[in-house]
Image 1 (tube, rainbow, N blue to C red):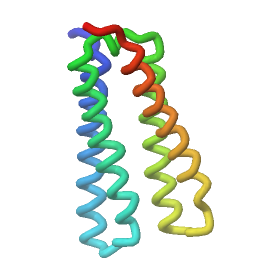
Image 2 (image 1 turned 180 degrees about the vertical axis):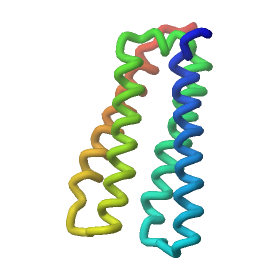
Image 3 (image 1 turned 60 degrees about the vertical axis):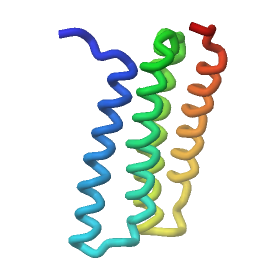
Length: 125
């Protein structure tokens, strides 16, 4: 079995995020815990959708995955998304504590900025 490419890892991570978001959404509906809707939305948009977009972009620009910072960018973005979503859950439970959202947002932003920087530094293929 071969080692998964970075684009494959992003796509697989995206579908894990989708599964988590769907389970989260079903749980919210069953328990009528709609105060978590912001966290649910971020699970699906930041976790699922952006991971898929990054994965398909890596497939389209194959040299992008070879950038020395590509693995760092993957882990930075995924970590940021996790902290962001968990932070949204914390805020839903205690609106006075938004520090995890701020930290997760900044890490996610840095991961996205690194991806954009790598994309624009890529030599044409």
